[in-house]
Length: 370
Image (tube, rainbow, N blue to C red):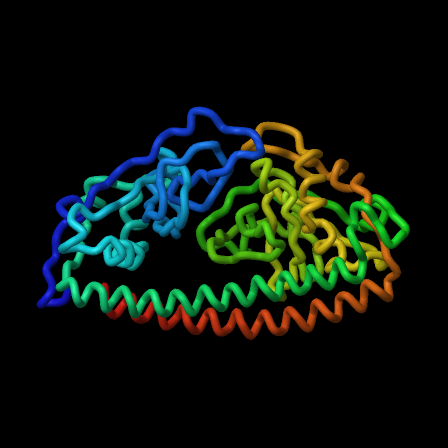
């Protein structure tokens, strides 16, 4: 603690407001994402929060604090925090202080199967209150670093758009197949299609355990929140993933079911049962299949194909393999793969820069708040 700063309990200086239980889960076409202190899930047609900081209250994950921009619906598994007097304690400073205390807040979780926030401990959390001028200086510095990170992420998005633009230029719309390529169902060029394991995660497991949240909507692997798992040697080949495998998210909300990723990491990992592992013959390249299935038109195909409730839609392996796609000449697929590889190298440079800036941001957060 800094001797020249005042410290107060969170409950004394901030309002803590619980979210609202979702009574009705709306069908596709709704506008506002639902948060529970974690990431966005399904959508509903109303909102109860806008531009605010939220904290997970039930089923906490290690990343249990976040700022959510825009209008959204906060359900009863999350809470929002707002300053009682913005003249003496800026909301933007409260947000940074809570973000800096993410690990401490997560440590307040109680439970074995799932952690639930101990509210008395959370309410007693000490919040620093430096002079207003210093609050604004700290926020400006941290926002500057955050802005750099966001610009780098926009560069990544532009590179992703470039790869997709090249895809359409070379192959056309895969649904209308305007270039007249031969077509075939996915199963005809699969050599192996398997579900992941249903075994639970465990502390200190041998393998990184990929779950549906580790597959992004855009088609990449996100290792921000990972778990570990142990698998017996006689079962490992059924659920292990290696570089070049295609991963398909068979069960999720209706908006997210069908996420498809190319596993391009050197480390061998294990997939959960909500994911299908696909290995291909030499007629179709993994990078081409993934780019095809991640087009907006094929995402719609999977939404129409999915069965079940809005928040638990499912596509089984047989249905997945029945989907028909264009199959352009392998030489053209290889040319596309080379262009994507060049783009991926540029993305790696940008990602490295993001990591460096995030490291600096975390260092400054630690300096000011810890």
